[in-house]
Image (cartoon, rainbow, N blue to C red; front, side, top):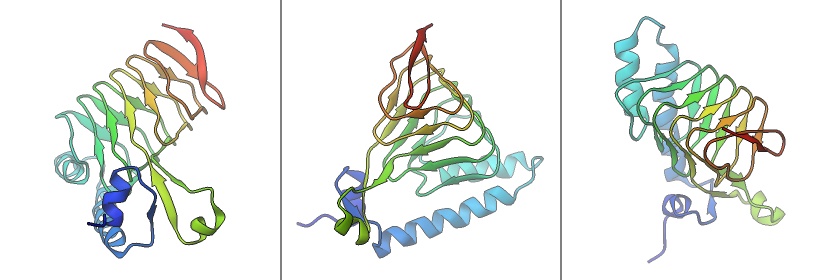
Length: 184
């Protein structure tokens, strides 16, 4: 039995981003995000209800400042999750955050990438690998977290970093490419 493009995407197999089923799913999620991003700061109850519909799984206490963007809502966040303005999560693969995570402004978390083969790329082929962010992690402003990365518990990612490989627990890491600066 042949896998659908969605199944390929979720399994980390190259898939075509031109698939109609995928476009329908994104459009439905984007409509919910448009509504979420229009809600006022004092509409906390409505915001809480809607963000819990947008994301796959959440803790009880979360706050995501607007604007916020994702593709599928294939995101799980633990307790005490906070994301500041302009957070973009391209969640073609699963994105998991532990408890007590802080995400500064203008952070991009990207599970998806375009294939290197130019002919396949012109046809819309992509790949997606999950991202896992542990407990008590702080990601500084203007960071990019790339496909397949794991960031260990208690770590801090310095502002402006490009995280293209796993970061161990209990450290401060920064730079482009991001690397461990010191242990905590």
